[in-house]
Length: 302
Ligand code: FDA
Image 1 (cartoon, helix red, strand yellow):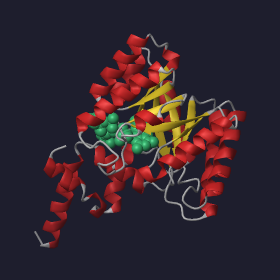
Image 2 (cartoon, protein in one colour):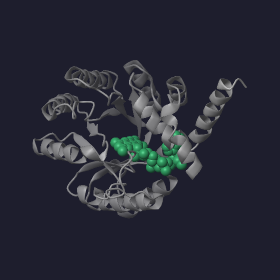
Image 3 (cartoon, protein in one colour):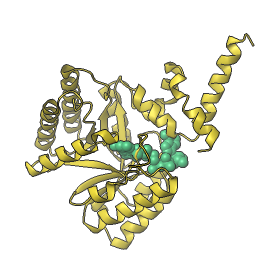
Image 4 (cartoon, rainbow, N blue to C red):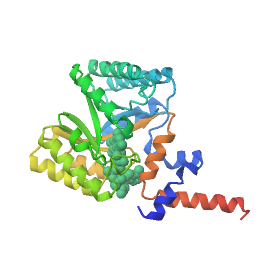
């Protein structure tokens, strides 16, 4: 993204919420579980599987964290009863990580147990770097405690990722979306790409089941090379994309015989997620600039 565009994108928090909601509607299934189920059904009909995310990382009480866990139980029950090809993605902050580690663990364990009873799987999203150690430690403890139906996310922009990936058996690899200091994160576009490829090669070499989460054509090409060179069977990896981003490319990957999972967020707490997605949309600077110009002109009576 050009420098001016990046400066404009930083103004997103100043954009009125209704406009953010309108611009980001393609990235979110809707406010209710019924919306998510409808979207997953359509994806399944096109040969794509899904991972369902209950939006709600901004919780502030134990009751709210338990309510989010409760919504995941509802999601798992619907996936089961409707025989959808989908698993779930959770954010530890939504389950109470910042309130109390025990609360978070308790909530996560209940979701994991429910998923296991239904033969399903739980992916733990990775949030900003203040959570990385706690997230990886919890994942390692739970795996050691015989919870085998969970996997974590690693972010290629973190310098530590190449070390973190060792010993993990199920990883979603993404670039990373949070703003991190240069001391711990690669900041240059090409450095992040190089770290992604290096990490992917290592994950495949060590036999990790890998979710290749990217819409970057260069990385998709590199991933196709890596899986072909390793002779990986189609059930040993999957591509992953976000709802509303590059669906045509996703169709092509499915047609070529690759497993493809779409991240499907739903819920009423849509704001934080929407802003992150809009910041990555190459066209967003134009929309924001046009909106700001319209409002300035309106205020000056033009
Ligand atoms: P990049 O941002 O360079 O995008 C490549 C191209 O894709 C763009 O040029 C554009 O054409 C298109 N594109 C990308 N985003 C778009 C958008 N919003 N609107 C329109 N077009 C867009 N991050 C994290 O820190 N923790 C996590 O747990 C996850 N989880 C996760 C799951 C899944 C399934 C995906 C696909 C991604 C994540 N991410 C994430 C987000 C990830 O870290 C990263 O920010 C985005 O995937 C964007 O990076 P790309 O690799 O797609 O490249």
